[in-house]
Image (cartoon, rainbow, N blue to C red; front, side, top):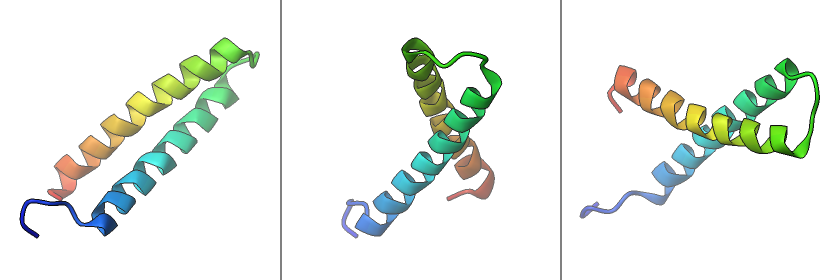
Length: 64
C-alpha cells in the first residue's frame, strides 16, 4: 500500500481506542463518589491515556 495506512485499519484502530476509552471512563465514574465537571475532565483524560496504553499493550502481545 505504498507507505499509506489503509482506511479500514485506521477505522479499526479508532474504534478500538474509542471502546477502551468508553469502558475506562465508565469504570472511573463508577468508582468516584461525586460527579463534577472536574471529575469528568480528569476521568476522560485518564481514560484516554489508559486507552492508548491498552492498545499499545495489546499490539505488543499480538504482534500486529
